[in-house]
Structure formats: C-alpha cells, structure tokens
Amino acid sequence: MEQDTQINQEDTIKLKLRRVIFGTDTRLGRYFDISLIICIILSVTLVFLDTVASINSQYGQLISVLEWFFTIVFTIEYLLRLYCSAQPVQYVRSFYGVVDLLSILPSYLALLFPGANFTLVIRILRLFRIFRVLKLLRYLSEGNVLLRAMLQSGRKVFIFFFSVSLIVMVLSAIMYVVEGPGNGFTSIPKSIYWTIVTITTVGYGDITPGTNLGQAIAAFTMLLGYSIIAIPTGILTAEISQEMGKSKDLRRCSNCLKTGHESDACYCDHCGSELEAEI
Picture 1 (tube, rainbow, N blue to C red):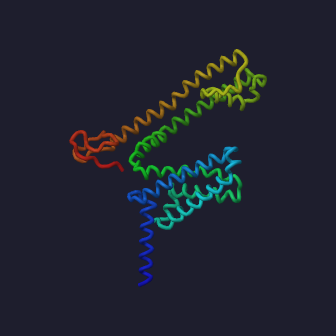
Picture 2: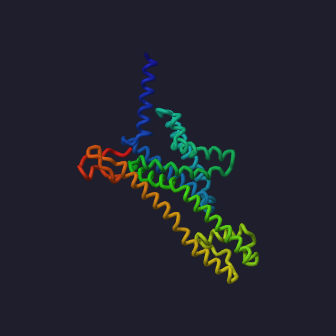
Picture 3: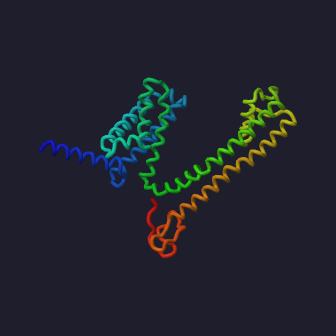
C-alpha cells in the first residue's frame, strides 16, 4: 500500500514538472520558459564577450564562473526534462533534445579539449523555444512555405551555381594570363578569389587589375555579377508564389467546398462558415 502511494506521489511530481517544463498554458510554465530564454541570452552574451581581449583580461575569471553556473543550470534542466518527459527517448532524439544536450556538452569537453567552450554559442539555437512561449507556432506555416520553396528550387539553384562556377573558372584563367603575378594574380586559385569577390559585387580591392585589358574584363565581370544576382532571386520568388498558391488550395471550406482562402483566414469569404484550422 505504501509502495503504491509512493508511486502515485512520484507520478504526481512528474506530472507537475511536465506541466511547468514542457507546457506554457500555466503561469509557472510561462515563467519557467521566459527565465530559460533570459538565461540562454545571458549565457551566449558571455561567450561573445569572452572573445574580446580587453574584457577577457579584466573579467575572464568572473565570466568563467558565470558560464559554469549557466552550464549547471542547463544540465539540471536537461535532466529534469528526461525525468518528467512522457517519452524520454523521443525527447532525446528530437530537435530540441539534441540542441539541449549540445548546449551543455562543450563546457565539459573544454575540460579535456581547451577552446571547445566557444562552441557554447550553439545555445542560441535554444531560442527557437520562443515560438512556443509566445504562441507563435501558427506562424510556422509561413516558414514551411519558404522551406518547401527552397527545396523545390534546389535543382535549379544547383544548375545555376554550377554554371556560375564554370564562368568563374574561365574568367579566373583569363585574368591570370592577362594580369600575371606582377599585378597580384599569383595563381589561378588567387584569381578565382578575385573573380568571386568581383562577381558578387563585394570588391575588397586587395587585388586590382593593372592593364587596360584586365580592367575591361573586370568591368564586364562586375556587370555580369549584377545580372547573376537576379537569377536565384527570380527562381526562389517563382517557387514561393507556387507554394503560396498550393497552401491556399489546401484551405477548403467544409460547408461550400470553396478553396483559395488565405492561410490566416478564420471564416469562408463565400458562405461565412468557420474554417478548420491548418494542420
């Protein structure tokens, strides 16, 4: 009897923890997630500040103590998630589970491999939880449209990238022959670097052509760069338009069967019936 009582008490504790840690429908759960997000932001900020030499020399020891404090907090949180999760294995394999684990491992790995603690910036990925805390999950459907559009345009973008790579190699070889080592084009790989910088309209200016023919080729490369930039933009825009059209077709009124409703529409614009929520 006592054993059954202990089991029931343990289940009750797990249920309460689960509501706080995994849920946002309670005040404590909301406070927990907001506190967690603040800790993540502070922890990542410390990692950034630790890379500044003047700050590291003056406050390095304090930053190290605070980093370990946040690491211990996140470790306890991760263990509590494992303890109260309804499906611990599924949580460990999930995106959030992997990120939660990776956010604490670097500190322990740094004890064996100095410098590994800078990978703590992966903790910033945990800020994706803000979608759940602020009830923004309904807006992820728009993100899915963008993701599907990128996947659909993958082949076209690959062909475009491959074609640009060929153009870059041809122009690099020409510039190497025309300019030569005297003007900074010491090798074809160096010329490839110049061509990529020029064709993307970045233009660092660390290598510049000195001959008239080389400058003419450089001018052509710059103009070509502006033309090239517009191509992947057009490809992605077309795919996004198609995906948005498909998402509208999915919103069908169960009463009059009319399609084409906006993703955020709540009522049918034809019969006024309430639309079913998107899944």
